[in-house]
Structures are given as structure tokens and as C-alpha cells.
Length: 112
Image (cartoon, rainbow, N blue to C red; front, side, top):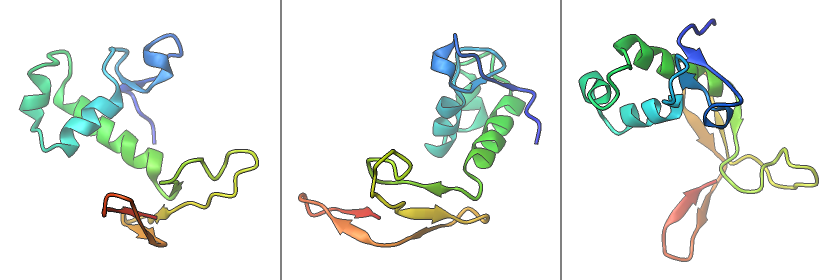
């Protein structure tokens, strides 16, 4: 898949993927969508962002995690010498499969 509205520049925003060379990271836009904001609510504080930028940011994020294991623990299972295992695997349909729930001290549980 080719992304024409997403740019990566090591000298800008720490090399994070951004919208069309602007200092607006894809992660910011995707996070706003995840919080339930509408296109209009996203474009309002970022007038340079166009509705198609939002859609491409979502496609970019989907492609970035497609069919990859997402480690939900620290350290990364890919770190040298690490014995950590990934906690969940994201399936092609977007659903995650977890291997366990770990109880935390505050009574909450972490997916793992």
C-alpha cells in the first residue's frame, strides 16, 4: 500500500510518521479518532489537516499493526537477552488474542 499523505523525516518530530510534512503525528490523529472525535472536531484545531489525511492516517495505523504480535509487557520480547513473551497477537481481522490476565496490586488486571 502506498501512502501519499504520510511522511517520515528523521529531523522532524523525532522521525515519527506525520501528516504531509506537517508537525502533526499520525499517532495524534489516530488517538483523536480513538477518543471519538469527528473529522470536524479534528480539523478545527488543525486547519491544515484535511479529511483524507485522517482516513490515510487510519489506514497507515492499520497497516502498521497488521498481522504482527504486539508486546504488551516490558521489556520487549525482541530485546537482546529478553525472556519476555508477547502477551497478545493481533489477528488479520483486528481482534487480539490474549494468553492470560495478570492481577495487579491495585486490584486491576492487565491483559497478558
